[in-house]
Amino acid sequence: MSAVLSPIATDDRLVYVSVLDPLARPLFDELAHEYGSRYAGLIDEQEIAHEMQRYPVEAFAAPEGAFVLLLRNGEAIAGGAFMRHADPGTVEFKRIWASSRHRRQGLARRVLAELEAQAARLGYTRVFLGTGPRQPEAIALYQTNGYTLLSAHDFGEAEPPGYLFEKSLAVPRNE
Image (cartoon, rainbow, N blue to C red; front, top):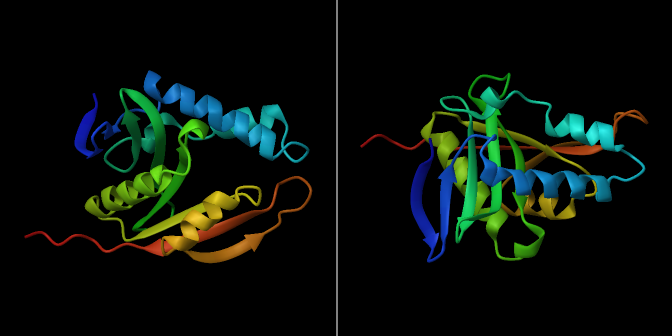
């Protein structure tokens, strides 16, 4: 079952769905293709497929997780998810993505803001996330939205390097 939120713009709306929802498939397919293009030589196709299936569906389901799509005219043009992190009160954001045909419109920023708001509504007080070195747009998105760089790491030849970020969330007051 989907939960529809108020529209962002005339034709845009945020919808919470399962990661298995058919609306999400094109975004996941494009994300996997882009990972393959950006990380060619570092990550092979099998590793990308494993990464895309790495977490159980339930990890991104309420009440501890969420998966949101930004729809325009019924088509998913951006999305993102979160799941409970091992640290108490912490959520981990994953798969924040905008369709390549719809970039430079602030869509990832909208999704990021919605994920932050939903995480805060659920009582989370901290966001943790990671991204790769060949995703400068993601690094810039997090830096310009108040995320603190925890570390830039290199796990060696077996793993690609990456960047880890965090941000504190203000939990909404019940009025």
